[in-house]
Image (cartoon, rainbow, N blue to C red):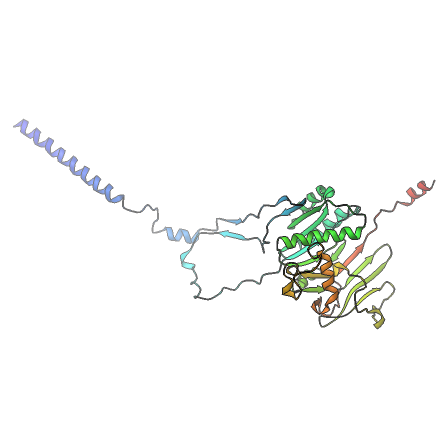
Length: 366
């Protein structure tokens, strides 16, 4: 009897073990089909209270300096100029605040896009104030809403110091160089402008081109005005000389955005700033390149603006082509502002040499 009872107990123990094993196997089998999640009934409330985890700024495109064929050093950030830098806010999704999707065919309201401003500045090797003037102009351009591209042209031998200055300005720029030697400053300046225009034409940089001298001072409203130019724009420029105490106004006389004539008058001794019929000329006595801006597409698409496709010396002398267009058809010129009643650009003449103090001059005479 005792042996039979012991055998029955062993059989029952094995049965219990097999039942537990079968239950665990079945539970594990069906658990494998369940989705992995740690969500609970309280997770939705926690998500509603979760704050913004951080703000990420998308990195700007890298800027690199390369050398193109012909020895032209170019600071190229992008071929297509961006409108503005993007800022992304990182936050958890909340299904309860989702707005309904826009209707099919609807267009969401977006801010109007601004035209690209292409500011070209030429340099001179003998200008001892060049670094200070470029830095001052850079501070002005930093205040202009984007997009804006600053093209600085310089002789190859003078580039290292200027390149370091430009990198620290915070303005999107391209630094172009040339290796030719010139004895005439005017010819060198025209060559630099042609280098810049060739770069604009080669890369199809669509925007408004303006030649800004390093000595120029600007009213910030000027840059918004020239963004409205369709073909060509013009405005009066005040040329100021502090050491000679002279103020000369050079530019158009306008009425309702149309050019009525041109003036080049010294207002140093004229307190009333009056103009007479004898002050106006039918054509500009001399083209002040800082008093004009134009749509860059005229360089590679002249037919769009009513120009013939084949013009002599256009590809080699773009600045000459611009001068010809200015002189031949004044109806394409838009006056800025509409009646040219406000000066927005000043050209400041600075002495090339710093005068010696009086005691140094007396010692030099001895």
